[in-house]
Length: 582
Image (tube, helix red, strand yellow):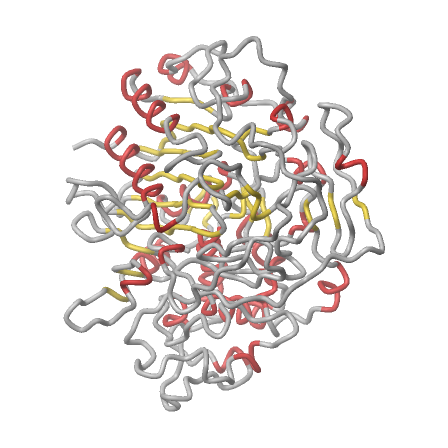
């Protein structure tokens, strides 16, 4: 899911999952944890207190109903659904041992969405709201330096519009080194995005860098909305975890390119050599498929019949079928955004490194970047599960409440026995390498800093400078005369190695009337999540943004001035015009 990503790509698999008659409800406050096949703990549905229960693991003999997954195709990451309880987002998450899909839960009838529209926290007569989880409330924050103190534009006692929780006014969640007027304009633009109608969203996060220094951050709205009691809502904070959809591809590619640097993988070698079986488009049996093609979505692989490799299948058996290959385009010549490319890349990574994909990325990418997150839900501690952000959509009309799509309460953990029996190098798609990473906004900013600093993060060389430059280099560019890509569905004009290019003069331009302003990075769009990590090439200017849901469908939010979605335009336009003016 990178910059041109996700939802716009309704492509070959725009199937719609039908919302079940009984909407999914969340348990109060902090998440209970349910392992596959268990029911919601009785106490989790009982309204007894406004205090958040600790995360517990419950398992019963009652199993949950499942339905046959429907194929999906999207420009962003997609994965395997197990039940048809909710309308399908344009890209979907793969329920697997590491990343379970949304499950149907038995709950009571829905109550009105008390928190569909987020109120500013200025109402001093409202009942006391819960604070953030203990780990957040007791976290020791870095004391601001003199420069930061001089430039801060609000006092600790002030409340910013759009912040329903006072913890969002704390230094780790809100600060600005911009001028007072610029800060006020940017605050106002972001605050206006929070709500439950039109283009509004339940929660958001923004972090901006200029000349290599962080100059602005803002966490607004809710990461969790209780359908039973608004006092059980939880705030978006810098250490909230979100499933970041196709932004995950940047982390997968980082791990893969490390093996390229070590000489263990050649970008232009036939990947059959690494997979242990012959991978060919049956329509072009003499044309080898390379890593460069997989990383740039020019492999001639398409997300069909499914945009994921089912857990019980191997990549070898899956890619033997003709259905997942284009018939009219030779490998290397045509761009078609496909999540299956990254399933293959992750499987190759396992075969070459000898490690399971999730463990390799944690050890070699996330830990060196000081990132909190994982491709495997079982890696999260109980306290971290309390910080998990839910992804929402309004599936019963704009006037209804937000319905959870991913990581609702109780949080469902993957099946440990399946993970234990998995043999690395057979189907790394079980970890959703194309979109299943759960990570915090703070940690995403570490990846951004690394890319802007040519592979270096806090003195640690994660990638070589030349490697970052190679990833940024355009491998494919859309040519309208040749129609060498699925531009209508993918809305992507140019792509490097797991990175999108946004030209200031193109159809995916970041801001109106800014032909001088280009960006590189990746977008993520899935289940209602919208986000992006991007930077100006050749500079240390960049930013990230994310939202954990939306009130109205994709089709109502086509861009005003570009092929991006309006949500993406709203973020990019507000940041660029205020922080990077002409």
